[in-house]
Image (tube, rainbow, N blue to C red; front, side, top):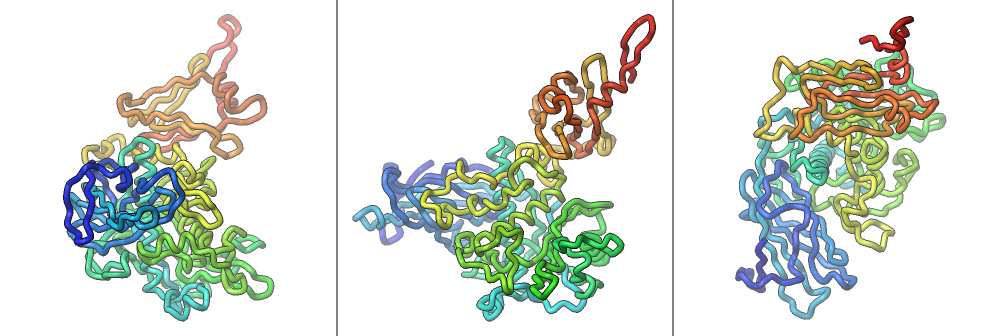
Length: 526
């Protein structure tokens, strides 16, 4: 990495590295990445004193407006826009808070952005009722500015999609799988990722799904997930309504696809006997050709529309007015927490869309309450910098990351797709003497271990040097480690082709595999 110091006239000259110049820590100089918005963590300025400053990011050949980010006690995080190909990025540190020398310090950094156009994309979609008013719940000041209208919601969902992508790419890298990540379905259109220059760019496409279902049907309290009296199972639920609407829409939802779906018309009803959000469900999964994660729009008022708003939204300590806005789960009492849950819990449902189950920690638990810590170095009411080691719940659990490693949306260019003849091949298993034998010709990537339907452990076979098509496990050791005497152990064998095969009760299966023969004693059937 080479450092440059900028004079006030913006000319650059090569000099010895300044100890205070910005240093990028989480990305290698010249590294190949696969997302448009790159999350950067680094250090800048003196590391032995308390101070606050700012870093300005100048993008490649000024194709994207410059942005400014916080520096807190030498730590900084920023989101960098990339063009396809090689990018020269400038990180310019304001030194005035800690130095009498007014000259800024600049680091020039190279990143190579290679879009994964061969992979199926994640589609961003907004469900709009047939007779929708095309507005979302919002505080009065945001209603007055028009931030509650559909065009603003489109910008918020687009920005959230790029935050999901930046977060996930960083998590894949931290887990040793490179900077692989899902791509977003993009188109050449007016871009809203910056509020400084909304010109035409290749940017995330937002599908507006104008449904045949009415407001009355979508806002029916009997199908609201938060209804304390439960959902009426006799009525069509919100997930099915979204699915039907996607199928009515047609391409690209008429073939295998992955969708993050926002319900525009969600509404927090404060009337007597209500007090919950109608038109909202947090669900993810899929059937037929559509994999779908859905979420309501009741917290979207707190989301950023542009990169320039990301830090301020994740630090906005404004109290949620519960006379008009939802305090979701009792954890959204301030706007920055609304932002965390709105974007993060939606990502949780996208995780289900991408096959991830609930996990012991991270996004697929309730770790999304810490999502702000991924993107900011300052948290409200926290006097210390938020470094990567303090991000707590803002992570994908390791078993989720292993699933993503072999998902078709995450495939790198040099990795071939699954062979056609192995596309639907699942695992088989037997008891052989005291061993559990698992075989899968497509290769086994992961074994998840459940007790009472909660993952309590996993076995990771993601090392590509060994294509694990056959695994032997000692039954007694698994029972001793995970089940004990009374806990029934359930196992899920996840193959590299995304098939899953469940063994519902290891103890019972092991016992039922034994046969006592009068002469030969105990043998095992297969």
